[in-house]
Amino acid sequence: MKAVRTIAWIVTTAILVAFIAMNWTKVPVNFWPLDDGNYIHFDWPVGFVALFFFLLGMVPVWLYFRAVRWRLNRRIASLENALHASSMPSLAEEPTASAATSPRPDTTSQTTPLTPDT
Image (tube, one colour):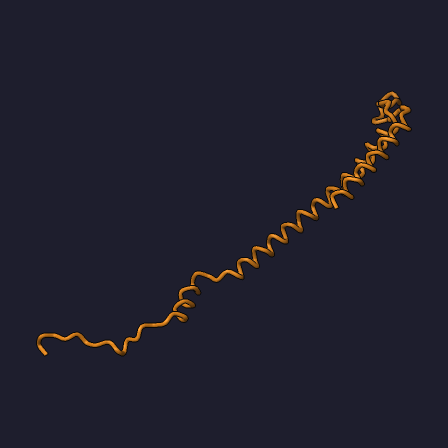
């Protein structure tokens, strides 16, 4: 499975590098309008602009799935703790359970000590 994942990452990286190499022409990207009607802009290659906005769109989805994974891990840990707590005998039950299973000494066959007066 790790080999398939590694091959997928290599193919994705190769496609991304090829896309950036084919679209190396620089385009103006307008960021913020100014008071005089112009914009703050940078001249970036098209590939970098596409990569930037792809990653920008992926961030909310990634954060959502991280939150879901965190919540599910907490839920699993809570259920495991509840199972662990219910499977362990409590300390109050342990002596009574061991007393019920251990043989008691026979107290009826005890002899009374002899005293010199009798």
